Image (cartoon, rainbow, N blue to C red; front, side, top):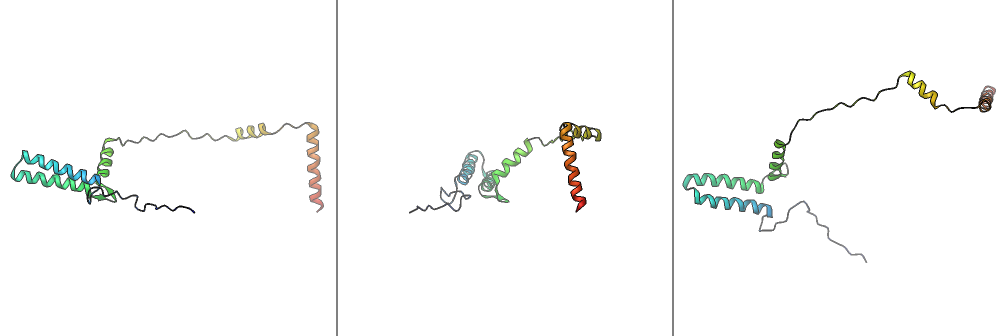
Length: 138
């Protein structure tokens, strides 16, 4: 009797480890919250609220936003490398293969022919003559 194993169905979905959040989402939200708490010691009033709103928006976007099915951190990484890497592509034309001239083709044909002795040449001529006679008789 063979054993049956359950095959995971959702292998492209990250596991929810900490409550309703994945580890990456929790790290982004936790880092944003920690940064807001640190800013609370530096700023007060309206400035604190403006910076807190900006930091919370960025942390939430990094944690949850997907563009065309791609998570925002991956898009940011790809954009970073796009602007860092050079985009100059140089096309180098390869030398076109030289086509043999008619004279070179004839030299190749002559060089390929096997050497025939006089007796082999006579045998070949005789067999060709016989085949031609058979065709003409039909």
